[in-house]
Image (cartoon, rainbow, N blue to C red; front, top):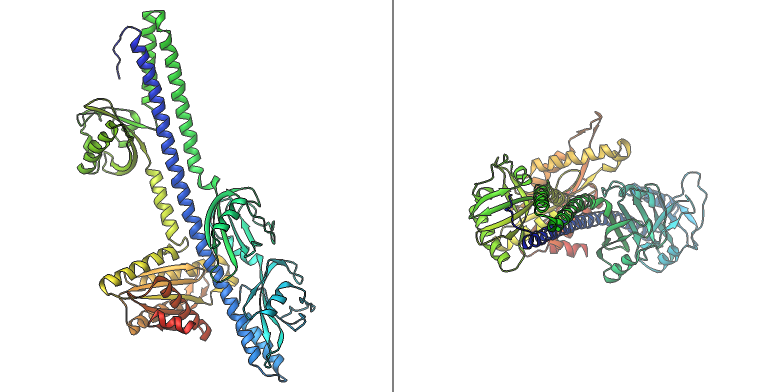
Length: 622
């Protein structure tokens, strides 16, 4: 860009004002861009922690429900049994049977009316009394299951929670309690597999906010705060507004690490699940951008300050003023030819100047931009007309025009830019562009992670519920029905115990692949968490058609799986299904399918149970 020489005075003033306006424009644009980037990163982190909190809360709820069912079974059979010589053998057999169904439980025990443990002691373990424990007194007063506050076990010396039910004998008298011990380490092991970054944390708290278990990636073996009710002020405020669910951003009270934290109440039980991701982790990319923008702004400000100082000296002589203006031109050229912000000057719809950053951005050779029609940089004439007409009109009216859109490189590839513009005259305008393609790809990847299971790449619970809502709405429009199926693997826990979690992951990936191969392109296979899967079968509304499809799934799952180690393992599955239509709700269908699956679990596993209407299953469940 060339400057014509004029005597010092008015021109000098205008140059200084112009430089200051350029600095202000660059700072404003950088601030807006950084603000937009931070908001996008924060929203993405919020989606991730909310999704994880929901999924883990569902998994914890499933374990608690499983334990509740086992305790209820023991209490029911205990009451129905008459006193006989072989009652002790019957109770021992019953406890052994139910203990085998509870891999998450460290111990399953029975006490007498005074609280002395009479059944479920470990080999070599002495009997002890828990009659002074609060959960013993609570269980004695109610028919429902009682969950204790976190406590330190007298028998084993570790942190745990107790799930207990009272026992009533055949004559209706209180006979003691049956209780299960779930260790804090069990939850810690489950939370350790959650990917929340190097300072992420997952914790489980009781209804009174006592810390049951916590895993922090930065303190993996710590039990700090277990049993305590240490919460930040922001967490307490959020819980006061909504006990069921919420999100807040604040330093965590236990370790002072600032995190964005989401919490979800475990449905049906007095427990709340918290997941947190540190701001240092999810804002790492934004902090890099801040440093780069500060560096550019500093360089620009220093250059303008130096140029202004040179201009100020122009009154000392024409020659020295001329030299100063020439140096100013070079400094301005250095600013315009920066490496981060592309700039283009448009006159009558054609490019008359562009800096090196813009040429690199569009893959153009030096000087190739000059003379090109501006519309060749856009994906369509309509987008070019919108920017030319609406953008220019907005700026002329005193407004600020900024937009994000995809543009076209010389090789035909598309990429995202952040576009700002300013009007220079009736026929000329100046546009500034920032390449945000990497940011957009990162947003798309985060959206993918928020809706997909990381291990199997199947849709997760959130995406499955969206697809189910779409199917219900479609049924209301077209009358075309569908089926919802829940599938839970049988025999998966022994594989994890014997071969390790990596082998368990191989089994889950193989089962996911087999299910996808069996269904049609318009059906949906999802992993809800743990070893639980779900299927949405579009247009399948007859019981015999659903059963035929599920039989193929069951047969495929039962085929032996060869691990990477060469060993062969096998699993089975319990499947529940419900036929859906326009009159159902998402919640009703999911609960009906879940209840159908648990009916199979209770009746012997490895079978299929199909319910024709969600409402009828609710009636059975009630």
